[in-house]
Image 1 (cartoon, rainbow, N blue to C red):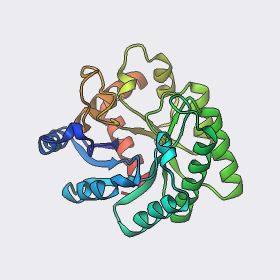
Image 2 (image 1 turned 90 degrees about the horizontal axis):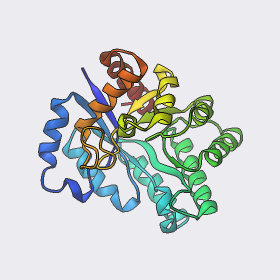
Image 3 (image 1 turned 30 degrees about the vertical axis):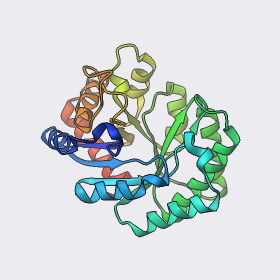
Image 4 (image 1 turned 60 degrees about the vertical axis):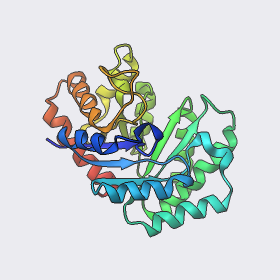
Length: 258
């Protein structure tokens, strides 16, 4: 049984010292591929080195919405564009999007989000979208962009939206990825959303080192724990674990062209 963790951050300091052991564990659990996300261009070279160190690792490049104050206009845009064009293991633009929970730079976030959508459209690569307390605004941006520039494929990562919000993004053609949050006992809204995502649009992730699933909640998360996400989805959706593994793996291959 194979699994694909579609969102990791193993470049973070919390993995210094034991990343080789972490990689052994993800392989033991059947994690055959990983997509390493990015929060700022300063990470590009480190992520590149990691993806060369681990052949099963691919990467995304972009600017996280909570780092929009570090956006330097076209200078940053060209860094993202150039790196995505030059390194063949770049499979997506992101993580990008909107986060109105921790940041009040709403208009700047929207501008930066739009510019990264343009890059993704130009390169015909999917986007990895971070969306927190901003579903309505994100829906509007994607709708307007698709009408003005054309469609972009992508995934709503670490999704915690309501069923209504989930349907908005499904209607826009997006994939939906669930993290360890889906294993939390009181995450009832996430459970309801997880039931309704079609099998050909579902993805799984850890978003490690954050949001470790039950039974490791509160500890450092790691890619091998994506198995717990798959197991919980199987329980919620009343499907065999092997089915969840099979179609989430197929979906990741299709979206990211792995």
